[in-house]
Length: 113
Length: 112
Image 1 (cartoon, each protein chain N blue to C red):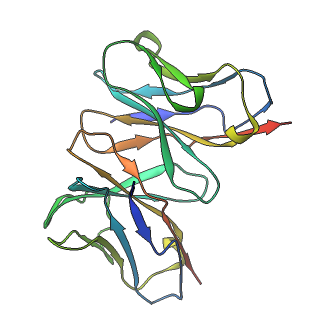
Image 2 (cartoon, each protein chain N blue to C red):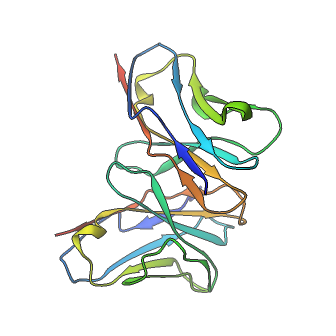
């Protein structure tokens, strides 16, 4: 019963390095959503992808952040030249359709030193 | 724009006591509403959801929630809390779209 998988669970980067976060959706799901959770905050939507397509990236910071969901393999959230303010928990969710229930992975906790 | 408010940041209850966590939303039409629970260092687990129909929704782990359109509320309840219920609870709104809007969460502590 594989749910949404995310790795790594914890990631430590120094300022200026790149962070790469992976998400494998639940079996049968072709819709992936990324959310960010800052300390003491709820989750904030970042981006919505389907296979090989970015549907909505309105929640993504304009610079340094990118996401992809290739035909084969997991979805990747990439943060270039990380800064301390990028430290957060990043959650991936998957669903079977754009209005379907979203099921969340365990998250990747990024710490930028 | 839609929003979700969880007025209580932290609630402490005794084991066996009843629980109600408040959630208010702002949205111009009938929303999709969700409650998720997050244990420390873990992801979010779906407790229950409201799409339409019966306004009293049953979920997992003995939780239920009631949608009240007149009050723009979707409060979560449990008649008898267990120590394992200690976690953070998030109310979320799906306003006819895939973007979920989350409240800031309510942290629940349970006293043995």
